Image 1: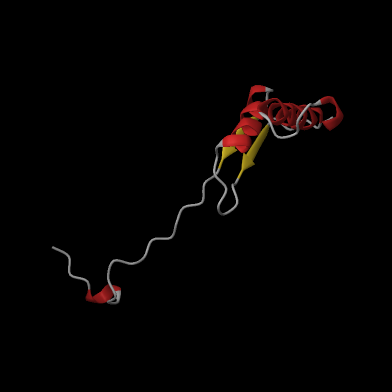
Image 2: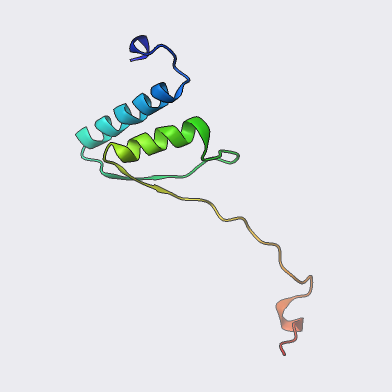
Length: 84
């Protein structure tokens, strides 16, 4: 595939990668998938183009974002909390 592309880093190449991934998934009867970005991954640029191409070529992609753990508001144990 990379021999057919003038560049492997431009928008056309990213869209082609997404198209091929979608074709392979559908050939294996995979119509739905979940993508969980790794720490530091941003859904923009080349990654966004690949994911959009996968979606545009017939695969449902659900993006699962991990929620950040929140710090407790109080340093006291729960039985010391006063409710008003």
